[in-house]
Image 1 (cartoon, rainbow, N blue to C red):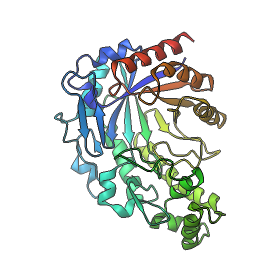
Image 2 (cartoon, helix red, strand yellow; image 1 turned 90 degrees about the horizontal axis):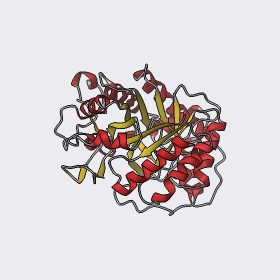
Image 3 (cartoon, one colour; image 1 turned 135 degrees about the vertical axis):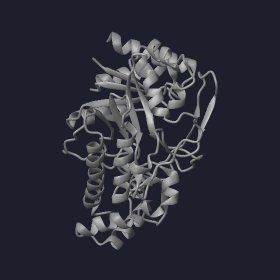
Image 4 (cartoon, helix red, strand yellow; image 1 turned 90 degrees about the vertical axis):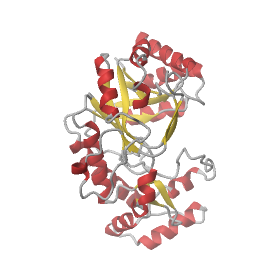
Length: 368
């Protein structure tokens, strides 16, 4: 039996009495609902009261309690574009009252506003260029923020599970703000430009016997194809240790709930779905593998994560540029590759024709 869920934002639910019925009509019994999320300009084509929501910065969709954040350097912002005092809890309660299960969707290390305000805690590449959207998990302040954010996201809320996104290091790729960096570098250069060279990461390299200045110089040269990095394993080990420390703190903060961890079987992956450490067991219910492109690459990623011993759910989009007629077959191929769950993106962003594609997807998976 394949587990099925659809993703949504709080504003998709609030103010739209028909939303739970639309979810049920799709054949879904579960919604993954954003409780802490990065900034986004979101379409809401099916909503009766608005068509666009401009969430101008990352926010916690729960009350930001002073007692929970006292003494923290990093503290989440509230969503000023919403009128509800506790948008997530209200939306989750609405869904639960309609008989739908709710998973709290929590984005951890991706926050441009906090990164801009605290640049020393962000990822910095080998050219000294900072990625303000990317909080680096090598810093204790970032790990403390992530654990408290996760705990506050689910505190006293009617939820059945939690989905953790960006529980690790973000990297070079950042789709948003009219990004114009796609395909500017070959894959190896993108890898090296995603290596964080902040002070905390340099300290971690030094603890492994590396000369941080030499590492940075070699990375910069390799971006231009002028050298070969010969200490990649140590760099990757430092990154995975930071991610593990963050993951342990976050998992402790949400103990008692099943956890879906966004992750990539490529150990060098950096982003919303950070690379998974090879051979390391993960104390989570399932790993959510990104599988948005239709085709063999996504199926191979799922199969690779399954072969590594993980219970795998696949992340599927019905939004452009995915052709609507390919969504059902793509999801079925991912199940054939070993996925035991399919996460459908996105219940609020999708137009009527794309919601119909999600319905056909659910029907195909349920009939197979």
